[in-house]
Image 1 (spheres, rainbow, N blue to C red):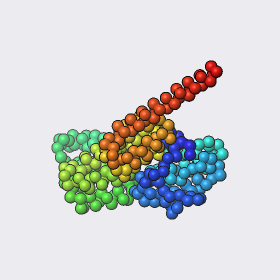
Image 2 (image 1 turned 135 degrees about the vertical axis):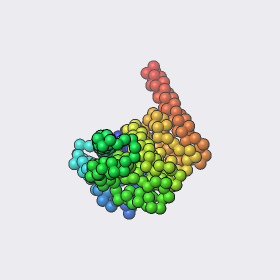
Image 3 (image 1 turned 90 degrees about the vertical axis):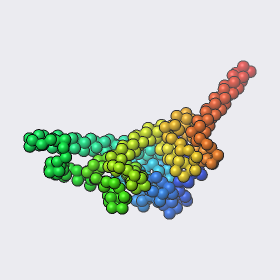
Image 4 (image 1 turned 90 degrees about the horizontal axis):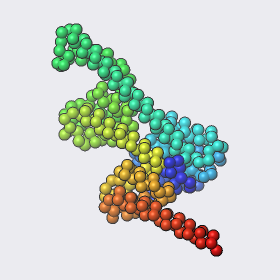
Length: 340
């Protein structure tokens, strides 16, 4: 298969544990294993069916689409965004020369749009909180109170002003996040309960997979954390930063290549994690086919490679040098023929 947009759609998925089992006409039993967006299980039936329909569209069969690759590209997107991309692919089938590149590009656009929307929501919440604080301080001064001293009645009034808007932010969180936080407050042994009014904005601004990961870490470390709310906000901010970094790496080497690195880090048995930022430069300097070979070699030799980053850098350098030597030899041969 031809590579996708950003060079990440190269064919070499052979040997990677997250690849589903395919048979003629589609995927066996919806067989996608280990996709990051599905928590290691099969994708939703609606997505499997929609991808199956697109992959069998007559106008999108040259080059043929790999259902597993398409599923990986769309797995972390909301239902509406994924459906929109697949519908656009079918609508433009007659004019698309690189279907996998088109889908990868549209998925990137949807992620960027979602990130901007989430950032606006966070800023809006911050503005609401700042205005509530300003009004509370103003009210305290009028009543002859010290606004920097704890005033329960004043805090209740301030909360009442922003409660309706805050509830709308909290309502955007999925039910499983509410349940996890409720469990943590009741059974997690936290020094302080998680306050939804404090952390909801940070949660909403963060992708759901990252929300779950941070709450899982809080479950493990909770009893030793003095202020769970401040810890959550800090960790979620760090997750959003990592999402931004990931987006830049995806733009450089493609979604599929990034997913392979993430798979290697979680299930590939690496002795040290391979940072995306470190992998970006070397992998960007070689062809998509070479990336496939390097990552496959890393998977096969994982237990014997002390530093995956050094291995990656050296392998990509070796491939580039071999390419230069081959090119120079061809030039010499052509020059020799010209002289004869």
